[in-house]
Image 1 (spheres, rainbow, N blue to C red):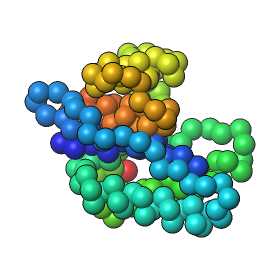
Image 2 (cartoon, helix red, strand yellow; image 1 turned 180 degrees about the vertical axis):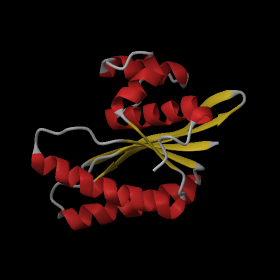
Image 3 (cartoon, one colour; image 1 turned 90 degrees about the vertical axis):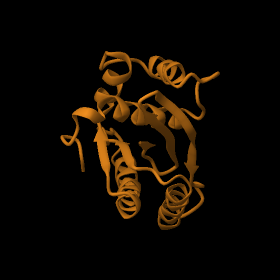
Length: 163
């Protein structure tokens, strides 16, 4: 099973692609989609959609795991992230249709056994689980890989988090 993990945003969208089979988990690719702050929001949204289209065509994931939004203090930021997340979900639905959402608490619990784990602990576990030489950069890519790993570990008991 090929899993595309996504850490949603509008300036930086992290992605991580892993393969899971009976032998374990293997990283395929990871990185970030970035949108220039000088661009208007519609242009940024189009860039996100086009970049996701490219990832879907290149890697053909079977499943998408995406982090749910959590509370933002800045109302302007939450609206922009929600708009970008909507475009992200549309692209995922268009190309894959198998979309699962996980809260930050669920992701932390799956990787560390503790729902209040610190960011550094999550990054370390991503590196260890995927047998990488270094913690993935940028942080958004490590977060996206964490979402994908979370799905790989919980996929046998699913259908409760499907969008």
